[in-house]
Length: 256
Image (cartoon, rainbow, N blue to C red; front, side, top):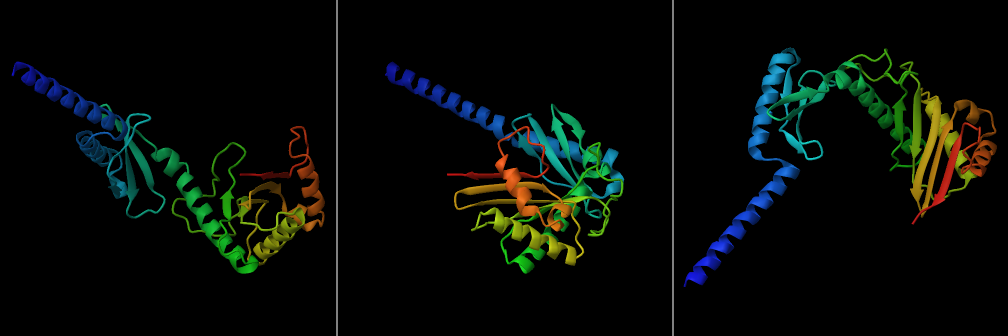
């Protein structure tokens, strides 16, 4: 009788310890509801104190087990580019990234790049027939790694904005020859120019039929000069040569 009672006590103790261990592990990876609630309340007090004029709404706190912080996304109801994160840990708000994402222009830069990408996708789909292309446009930063001082919060997208931009054609190619790639890049350049889109650099990425292609640093002058195929062949010949002095990069590899 005593032995049976002892076994029940041991089993109960082990069960409790297992539950506590599970709760501890869960808390370590996803946080806990009480701390999340405290993070939400602290974030609300924080924006009321520091950003009351921005008409912000807060998302629910999410836990990042890597740094042990709760992140709360704040976004404006009146400004498309005003959104940033607030970070909570150890009972208080530790920091936010309003300056980097909003004031320094990252959000505006990212949105305009996405809008230009959407336009470029439509042009490639219509003019080259690649309906499922994922062509991407990125506006360049200046030589100091800063976003252009021409960017303004919530400004409308305008493809004539005088900031250098790079376009990468992301296509699923069936023909991987440099001859075919030359035709595609040349045709894309012509289509973009006709649509009033001007890029200072072109690239191409394709991953299909066990072949990966990465090409970059092509300029409009390379395309219009009539020697693009020769330039691509030369760059491809030196794709493993770290001392190659050419600007264009060409990497073509078989993948599994």
